[in-house]
Length: 591
Image (cartoon, rainbow, N blue to C red; front, side, top):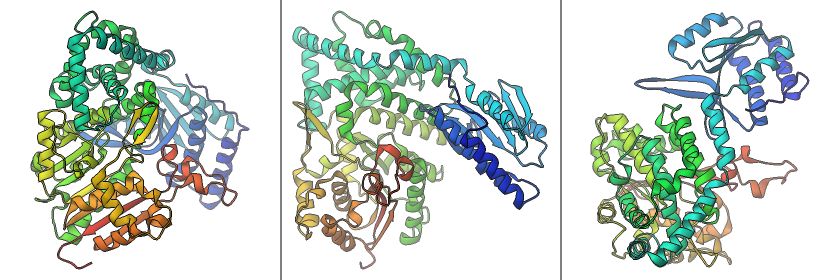
């Protein structure tokens, strides 16, 4: 249970009352818009003390109805909601507002209704505190009770986190040892594993290490139950074309003297806590946020070195929204396509899909009547890592079900290294169905490329030395364009994966289309990128770049001012400068 260390004399409380007094001098009635920012600052300061965050204007989903909008919610590091805050005017009848909100369906487990001079705290459907706020001690009492609330499911989850923080890596190491034993003694498993590794080297990376392949098996083994139970998807391992291939290897691994259930029974309480906690979350996307964090904190724990080299940074939702809406608008304004992203012939590709956020937002942008056609033949995405691929598959298929009311497998997603598609080699890509999907994508003229390239190239663990993946054709394209026309002496920065992404996307889009990527912003001004800037200007009719700044490593303390995660859109996940780029190529217009 979190303990909020707060006293009336502490700075956040004093700052709140000081701001309130200043506002009172300016107006006789304190309306919500004037006072809410002050109380939000107080809640934010309190939340930081217990490792939580305050998210303002939070949408609370309701099945079959428009979402409710709360002034703020308290979220822990697992994206679990601990409390809801509603701000009201000084002229409001607060008790009447409470009844009104509950009639609309607002949650009653832990919700704080606050006006400048009064607060009502409701927990588990009953009023716990109804008090004036002119006395700072009363305010502190309300906040401490608000932050102390802990539903039984969350208490169970907290205990599970404490107990199993180190257990998953230990279990994974046990699995690695078991794999080594079975490789020596189990011919069926040895043959299945060899076939699987060969598939991985053909489909993903010819240099991928044995350890990386084995860790993929472990990730699947440890997380398959979550996909089945938390997402209520019992047929996941049979439906997903990649999971089916991995299940063949798992079946061989477990064929002799241990069962999957028996081996994992030591984690039953941990899985049970995940499932019980997730059951308190109704909305699919909120479950996904929760499990993303569970994955980052537990299931990557046994292979941190490999995970770090993948450079995964998930794009904040407001940025995804902006990029998708902007592309939709550009299609209408620049290309005369009245239906924007939903227009026939506008094939869309996210080459680095992660867990599917861009594709989901694209689907929501379309009229529902247009979605089946786009979903079946003009929506594509690629992912090179196994678990994000699994999650993206489920997310996209679930979103389609939510929007249309019927389930349809998404055949536009491929497990493949996007950059490998530029190399021109013809090879089987993991499973026949996956190969067919990749080929269909390659045969389709792509009009829109949108996404967030990884900040580091796909790397492999060979003798504990991480080596960047080489792409001869793509590297040559960078060399003969961006590098050749650069005046810089040191051009090593052009080996960055996001530079490859721009080069690949430019070649893939052909004579007409739109590219929008969120990337490192070093290409905007840095000297080694002068050739890249030249070619982007030559290759496209219009180039729009939004520089979001945020190079914390470079700029912190430059003017004596320390900068931190609040000064960059990705927080601590990416402390480099960030930009959003829109590249527009219209064959009917001259550059």
